[in-house]
View 1: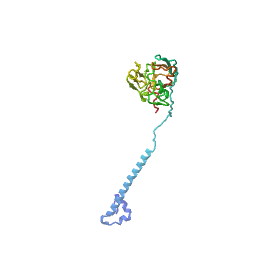
View 2: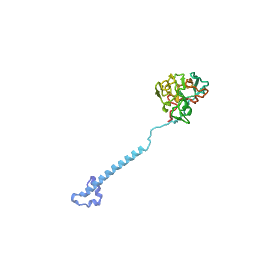
View 3: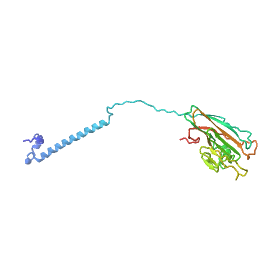
Amino acid sequence: MCLAGWFADACSDPAAQSVAPEWGWGSVTKERYMNKGKIARLAGFVGALGISGALVAMASSTTGAYFTDEVGGNLSGTSGVLDITASGQNINFTGLNPGSDKDQTINFRVKGNSTTSADVWLVFDKESPAYGQFTGVKTTSYGWYTGGGLGGYGHFKVTSAQGMSFESYNLQLQQDSAATNAYNNGTCHVHANGTGGDTHKATGPDNATQAAPECGVPAAIQIGSNIAAGTSSWAKVSFGLTGKATDQNKVMVDVPFKVVATQPGIRPDAANF
């Protein structure tokens, strides 16, 4: 006799029919077929998980069916230009008499092809022997030259169309850093852009009490600010000897300089990085 339901499969299984009849079909047969059913259901569940995982994997590895389109592009860059021209920058003052200065105007123009406006500077080579002889520190070696600048023997002045200026009656730097940085010495006040100085003259021959304060010439003096492309301007350079200069027919100064244009707000000696 075979039971309906989950025992039905046992009717065709001789092994199941030989089990002890104590429980009819027997507890062993029942347990056996209960375990088989559980296994079947578990296998079906695992199989379903496997199919779901495969579907997820397929979905993540494809781009889907969304519409796409594209337009090509390109990045290109070309550097700009800063171009300046000048005249009158070669200055040769001859026949200088103490107390009587001479001057010369330097005209400059930021050329129209420049892609930026410009600051303009009068720039000396702060390490050259000529700069040392002109205005150097007494104890600093400038190449082959040591001994300091002209000091109280010379007067130097720069003025500009935009009102920036420097002036000194004692062309002597006190320390190396003063060539490129703002500094103060008594009534001498020099700004970071090289403008300022001191208009005081010596009041007598006593260097200790009557000399003008040491006020060396900066290595860079600004003579133009934010000058637009295509615009011209000017600066005037004056030089003379004081009453201390008694040597006749002698070269008192011979120092090269450059007229330098920079982007606004940038010093000519700024590091490139």
